[in-house]
Amino acid sequence: MDSTDNSVQLDYNTARERLAMPEYGRNVLKMVEELRSIEDRAKRSEQARAIVRVMELLNPQVHQQEDYEHKLWDHLYMIAGFDLDIDAPYPAPVPEEFTTRPVPIPMKGSKIKATHYGRNIEKIIDLLCTEPEGEVKTAMIRSLASYMRQQYLIWNKDSVADETIFSDIEKLSDYRLKVPEGLSLDKVSADASFARPGMNQGAPGAQRSRSQNRRFNRRNGKKR
Image (cartoon, rainbow, N blue to C red; front, side, top):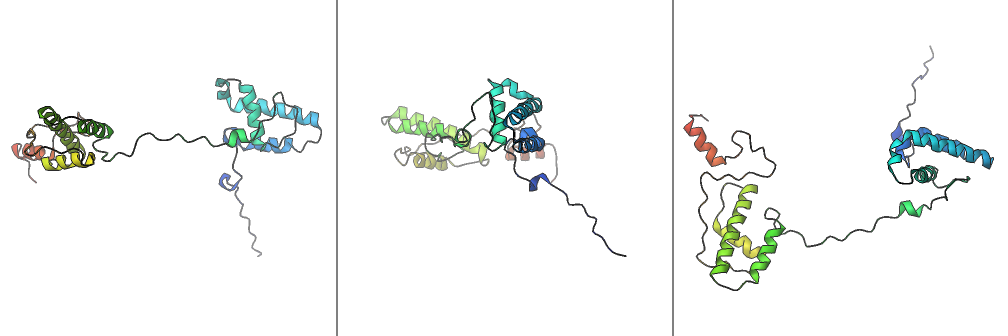
């Protein structure tokens, strides 16, 4: 017996030409392609109006836009690749109006040096650099360091040395700010909890640190 290949060649959209206006579908594209094959200009223009009405039905949300009829005709030209010779109620759009890239908006400010502290910490450090030396400045540095330690513990681990925070302050200030010698921070309470933003605060154990969990397990006789 003769073997005959009866397999059907499937036509996938991924292998087809990319649609300029996907919201209207490939059938509208076929209509536009047939439209350009009409030789009589009057009939071609009449058929264009019919296609625009179909486009309006397929894309009803266009009514929410101002001057939507004008936009529909612009879409027709875009589907046709701006190659359409018809009598339209609106002037043919210029391709450059739709292909010009937007002017990039320059980003303000420099890159954050330490994301777990945030940009506001850097601004505070800049302000502290301008403060005169004295007890007030020392108290401000201590308050800042305490807050930075809290942010550090949220994003890193359960404990951090004061010297690490002081070193970060000096680095973030580009060493313009010197932490006074002998400065120390208050000890972190055993009941303190540092939860990351977005954590489920109502979940059991969500507000306990790892060290607190160990103590909780021992009190309740939980074995490893």
